[in-house]
Amino acid sequence: MPGCLPRAQAPARSEHIALAPLASAIALALCGCGASSTPSASTVHTASVPAYVTEPYTHEQKLVEQGAPLIVADGCSACHLSGATHGGAPSFSSFAGHRVTLVDGRSVLVDERFLREGLLDPRANELRGYDPAPMLATLAHLSLAAHAGQVAALAAFIEQVGPEP
Image (spheres, rainbow, N blue to C red):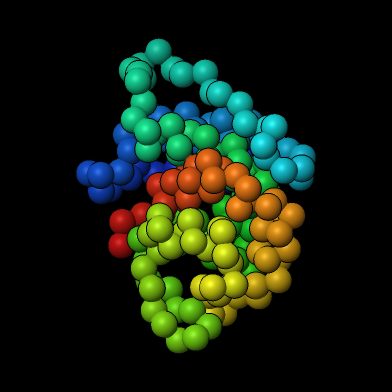
């Protein structure tokens, strides 16, 4: 759907994943834009791989590819990938790789570890300037603690979307 997600940009860091698998993952996520709001355990689909992409994917590339449809199916894209968030939630495109201030005043780097911890225990690291209620309600509904693979995939995708600081 047009306007659903911002246009992806090539990662700048060498440790980031090659653009082709990321583009494939984002294209897959776009296809599911507006998908159901049910938990994502049954909604993960494998994208068809373009001929120019060679396999096997690395473990990290597979996680990013798995995370893309979860971002849409779990409802994350509505608040975190929309250009019209108006400050209601941090945008994934400017989140990972940057420092954020928590409600307790600490400044922390948003990396994959921080993202995994936040998905499992969102109260531990609440961000200053954002209402935590929508995120807390969404994560309670998803019960991610029982789905470690989904947490890893979501964190990998979110970390990949963010630009180099």
